[in-house]
Image 1 (cartoon, helix red, strand yellow):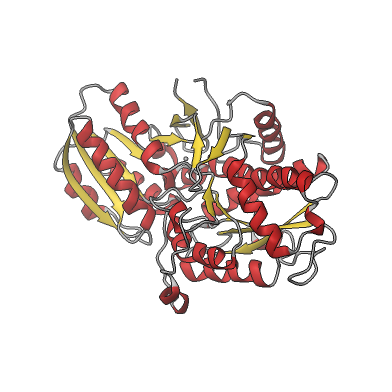
Image 2: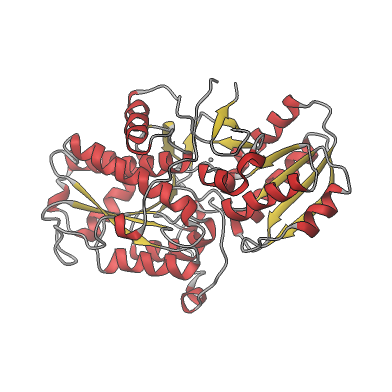
Length: 423
């Protein structure tokens, strides 16, 4: 993480309405029948307990901020992150927390825009006195809100920010979400494996979304690298619901593969309308579509969509087995990537705090010093998470080995669906 970048000062007075993406062997099932109930009313109180005023020391539970989208159409992703974070809080507190001291998650809703993320970060840092923050949901929100954490010297771990240059925002910025440049090409290669005769490719992306713009660049370069012909690039907005014009333009060029970078609501509607207009070829969805919440949007017409994954419920390991069981017990379906990444982010904080506590008792450190020392500890640790073993570069970029591709399989009536992980 480079020195702080003071490039968002001008944004603090704006209320941008851009919605941005996050910017994710065997068979696993993710049904669409029950979404986690993670509305703001179901989250823990938005005030931390057990902390003295800055620059005091911790007096009871250790507060960790969770700043994700609980409202707006981005809540289709954020509610999965709330679920994963809550399960992590329960799991690690059942294991004695930080060497006997419990953690306390403090939730703030970022909604789906930059202003919401900025407000959530400011509240968590200045009012709730958290030791670090997991969030925000979207990459574009991160570019606006992360510099606030950087200036305050508060550790930030992005759970789903995969756009280019996120860790470069500053020394206190890291992420557990692998960059799109590593993950995205896998789905195009999987499409070629299913149909080696692919030649023509049409690309769609949300032009008002920082992540989608970053992701589509990777997809378009992958198309060229694989020797395929890019026949058209169609733009849309994350707020769009009618894609008839763009879809018709693309279908008229007879593509063998269509690649979509957007969010769950707009992406799901685009998939549905492409199929309704008669497109029968393969579809690759980006990370913003990587949620079971897309299934009620395109229903039976979601069938066959390929999406690269940074998590598989079947990943071996004790921590993933515990996370998977807790999630399926609670929500009656397999855990999605966004929940696993949020769980992993909380885990990083807990295990870094445990390691730091063995060197210097965290409840005796002044809050500014605790935040600084915790940030250092985060970057040097290795963590066996539901995502597999991860670590960080000195810059704050996640180091992860295991990646996957899943294909959506739907019941004919569209009532249920699952992500089938390809071997």
